[in-house]
Length: 513
Image 1 (cartoon, rainbow, N blue to C red):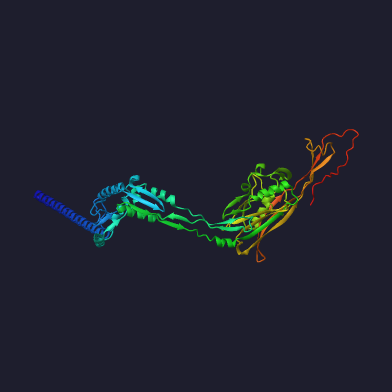
Image 2 (cartoon, helix red, strand yellow; image 1 turned 180 degrees about the vertical axis):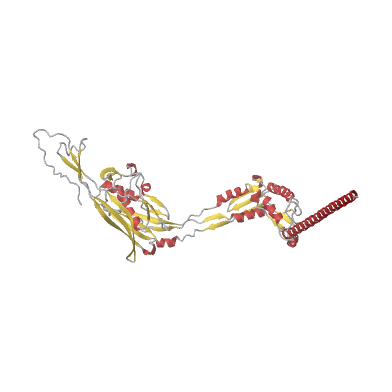
């Protein structure tokens, strides 16, 4: 009995397990069914959205351009009908037609009595038409369906045509046209002020020359039109007159003397005067344009006998020695001071080792080939004109141009900062006998050079307006080094019984200040 009950319970339990398994399988099946339905609905929704987006894009942006896209009806390129053709088909037809036109091309260009023939045989077909065709086939296809249809209907009624310039299609044509234009164009010359510093009327006007240039845009348009007509044509080359517009008459009326500076050379030798005149003559009549830089050394050229310079005293290491071109520094100094008073920009200037007697301290301008130059620049917006004057006693430089702004007047001021004491004399033995005509024996003395004190100085520019000083600025700070005196003594021993006469040479000790 107990076994029967046990078996029955076992059967009930197995039945219960089978029902649980069937229920789980049923639930699993239901879940799969729900998932399939959900996926289907999701895919369906995505498809609907994609179709909607496609329709939206087509409505607002039109169809994409493909190889099969054709040109609208009633569309032409350089008179060639491309209606309903793809871009590839249109390219073939256009190339064929234009090649035939090239072979039959004859155009005559005329200017006055001259005539030039342009023949298609002189050129080759290069076919640069891809970009224009791309623009043409895309025209009107970017709007929505209604706008696109509107453009399409308008083109059918009114037509759509472009003309590709023939100088882009026929290789070498533009070069040929440019070559012809260069033969007939006349470049105009700008009016200029003529400056003759030695004439009674120093300034006059050179009116210049009217020029003529080819209106190439109009000419190319006429050539395109002539080629499209496919018959021999004669075209008058259109010229445009170019008239200089610079108001030189106004500028001429504004020219006046801006500055003047002079120095004396009345005590100079004839050779030194020659060198000063020669150097300044290189600047007489010079016109310096705005922003132009001028070098004194480059302008005057090498200081050689072949270039017209003679031997005269020059300063080297604080000593006066004979050298070709002596005195040229007075020419550069005179010019330098005139430039300062005209408010020119000085790019390079150097002082002497000894003060110059003809100008105040810090206003000399030493020049020497290879290492010292006077360089200036015209910073005005109008030219300046330089005149130099040399008589028997004085040299002068005058600068002309527009008056200084605000009617300013410029003056210079030299300031002695301090005196630098010299170190007295030094005695040199005449071992080489260079001064044997002056001294021979020990104890005989000849003064070759006196000691000179040095100077520290500053140079200033002063700006006056209506007679009143409005600004002062320092432009130089120089040191002129002191120089020792030199006494030459003979080298031979005095013979027994000889007495040397007194020569009056006194030894100068170091200076005390």
